[in-house]
Length: 455
Ligand code: NAD
Ligand code: UGA
View 1 (cartoon, rainbow, N blue to C red):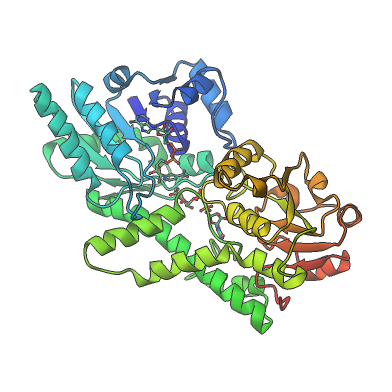
View 2: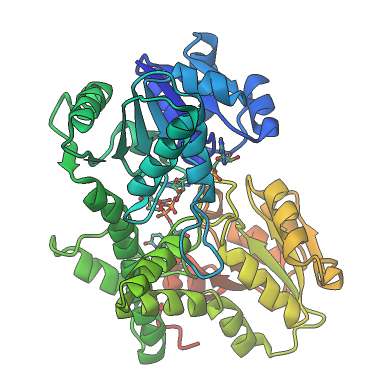
């Protein structure tokens, strides 16, 4: 099938590459010429395991085209995915300007029947706005063309995006029941047929319910994390190991094990903005989502838990103290720093006077870029950050090590070497990578999140 992807970011590029891998002819459009140049040069603009190889293979096979030519992009696809960003507006609602601009370009250039698929995470009612934006453009041209707008939200996780896309738990598709909607349903069924070979994974529903399902899923996952973080903070006080509790409750199939890991707060481009946007939708309808407000507040506070523990142990004045930070990306296997807890932790430690040596296996360039923006008005703070080449270089002479992201490379360090390099063997682990008893055996003073350390 002929597919166009509008917006070649995380979701757009993964969607395009995976659909090309399944034999489709995919045109990836982006307004960012730099991204297009990187892709046409044989690279990819993000770090995502397995993706570069798929992109290279399909580009070489002629199944992937990258360009910024809107007219050619619209002419190409029978199915047009909109996968542009929906960042938070000032009031927390989803900013739809990129989605609606994409819709207008479709209306401006389309010359035959199109299925327009909202892949971006968008609030209930957005499909109506997309439909209207296209209809307005068609009316302006005096063109009477049929089209249908479908909602097909994406549930992939960064760091496992290809695997998630290729083996989805479910494919949610919202279609309307007009004749054009039925035509769209048939095309979508054909497009996703190979995903449903073993068993049917597609959940068909109405458009608004599909839009809402995406927010409900992210809000539920964020709620589980904030719930565990809140309990972990209590566990610290009452002498309980939250890891034992996690297993104790996760073994109940009604609860399950996933997304119950306490830590130093959730980050990323989606949980923070989607929780906010859903709250905002509720407010428009005169309802307050009390649980989600708490989820957000708990998460904002959780990003300060590690600096608080460090302060409790080393004092409120960290001048003259050197702190190593392992992990900067918001999660492992990505270079994405959007809403990363590391940014808050670094800011707070600098504010307390510490000198930092930071390291991440892949996000160093992105960290340099993002931290320069975060501290644009406080360059004297950023001057106290050293960007280390290796994890061992970061701990050299450190009074404390803070682990913020659970990269595999951090899971089994040589503690004898680490201890020898540090001024004091003091570890604050924001991802509970280690067992407190094993750290005691290794001669390391260990502070996890909710690990009954009493700090
Ligand atoms: P992103 O910022 O990585 O990519 C968006 C791309 O769209 C950018 O490259 C931008 O240049 C491009 N763009 C903007 N306007 C355009 C236009 N008019 N025409 C062509 N290109 C345009 O964003 P992302 O992380 O891929 O997220 C996209 C959407 O998918 C968001 O709604 C997000 O909530 C949702 N989502 C993201 C993830 C994830 O893991 N990142 C997962 C599921 C859903
Ligand atoms: C999340 C969802 O998991 C995806 O299903 C969804 O498609 C995506 O958002 C989206 O809409 O963009 P992502 O943000 O890429 O995916 O990564 P996650 O693995 O969900 O991690 C998000 C944050 O939660 C990370 O900071 C992670 O460290 C944190 N987390 C996750 C915890 O603190 N505890 C956990 O148990 C799990």
